[in-house]
Image 1: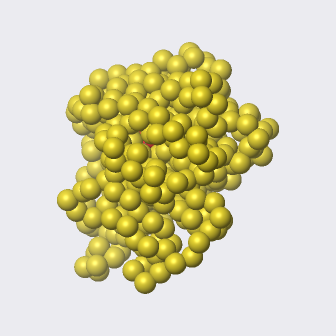
Image 2: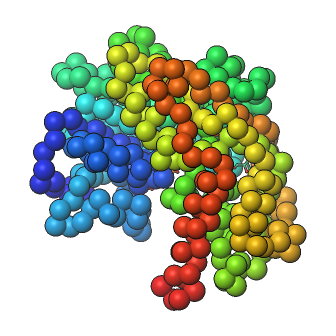
Length: 339
Ligand code: NAP
Ligand code: G4F
């Protein structure tokens, strides 16, 4: 699948996971900055490009898509050959922690080996041109964290197949930096959300359900562990940090977070408060939504990113909840109107 671009830009970027939450915001950012943006998209039986539809107008597409899959080495090599990127933003993943318990081998293949496949291909490309590599590492790697807040020196204690696979990918990224001199950086991003967040993640599940409850489109919301604490930021702020990491003189690993933590219950209460709804009337706890092992508390210390990249979060917890609630209320209104 190749949509031809009319404009040419000096710097080419390749985004894996361009159809996801972060990939779509990063594509917006890089297009805005004048990059020639390429994305790797896997074949799906139904359309997966809703989040980047605005960049794909048939008469003037702003990005170029290439079909490939992180499970398939030859397709990765082909995509790199076709796009010849100066910057690779590797965001593609089976990114749902709970699903990783039911699909552990698939998750390991895509997240751990998929990253290794891409790194190996990047090292080959780096023999002929400059290439910089961003790896989407995760605060899930801290797992049952031994220290609060977590920073770049905090030991990893992964609690899911997803987190174990991310630890592998993180170390492979550093290994390719040290062994082959690849400019490769890890962004250890804490949870970040937005109106483009997948509907199976807890924040979006809550804001979408609450908006639909408000308009009488839904009665109940089923949730699992409300006591888990997360450091939630806004995805748009976070993709800026990814770009900054690849603009530095040397590669490195950075925590990107807000240094605040809130329970799932707090997110739920703030959402329902904004809509003048009572959670007691609508929320039901479902044991099947609890995980075999949980990450109890994440809180990130982003002082290294602030010092080296000049990055800090711009959106507060309450602003984040509000912007997600407003976006989902708009969606629910369209649904109610039969749109
Ligand atoms: P997301 O919305 O779930 O997007 C994941 C992307 O990966 C989608 O474009 C998906 O394509 C693609 N993908 C899945 N399997 C693939 C495969 N086998 N081959 C190629 N592409 C594949 O995730 P996100 O929230 O944007 O997160 C981006 C990255 O950051 C992920 O690596 C995630 O693990 C990591 N991360 C996220 C957070 C967070 O809070 N959001 C925090 C830390 C780290 P389809 O559209 O076809 O499914
Ligand atoms: O929204 P979640 O599914 O995100 P989780 O597991 O923290 O993972 C996300 O953030 C990671 C960074 O730390 C990323 F690496 C990863 O890719 C993903 O983007 O769950 C958040 C918390 C968990 O403790 C979960 O047990 O919410 C709790 N929860 C309670 N009820 C629920 C539900 N989670 C989901 N998805 N669905 C529920 O009904």
